[in-house]
Length: 262
Ligand code: CO8
Image (cartoon, rainbow, N blue to C red; front, side, top):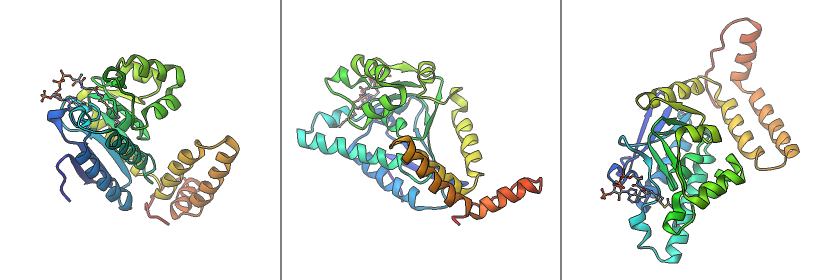
């Protein structure tokens, strides 16, 4: 399927979705969200795809936020629906059965930071800029950003960012724990692909179990989370790749994972 506002590429079990409105710094509008929603379904339903990368087309932006021009035309109900639509799509990223990595190649503001925060982790170019500047527009974040940022960096840092609308550079985002790694701008995708390929080389059942256990387990108290971990462990344990991984260890050889869903 071809898209206009995003690009979906699949190669070597890795899907890459580019936000593709470079003239508007990849701002998120309704049309882009509709395409992203479809692309995420395609990615989530294709069991050959084992990692998703999200990044921005062009050299300047990951995503500079919701499309402000489109926002200004909305009545309150349309704005409420748009906010819910964004939240649902970002939750879909978060709940994909496979890991999602954000490769933040420039401005990730407002909805852009919110999209990156919905991924499992973020690698950033040294040129990346993060922020929730909605307060400067008389707005607040509306795609889950207040919630995900506060859970990740703590209430106080999140409140300072949301109340002041001040952006932060990649080094501060690393200090805050928003970003796992800062890369030279030119080698961002290379670094992200290196990590994605490492993940692809692991057992498929174990990977899916690990993602689900962390995702669901951290939404509940520790005791229940540990029980969710028990279930995930049990499922991984009976997989073909677990038989191969444990046998290979005992036979002092490298495992050859088949990467099947059994
Ligand atoms: N929406 C629409 N167009 C945008 C956006 C945007 N968010 N960001 C940039 N553009 C457009 C500009 O209008 C400009 O278009 P044109 O060339 O036609 O004039 C083009 O992209 C290039 O932008 P600039 O000339 O401004 O580039 P600069 O390098 O000078 O500045 C910045 C780059 C700093 C990123 C600047 O563009 C900027 O501040 N952008 C807006 C950032 C922002 O405020 N983002 C938050 C948006 S609100 C939001 O995300 C809310 C999410 C929740 C919504 C809930 C639903 C109701």
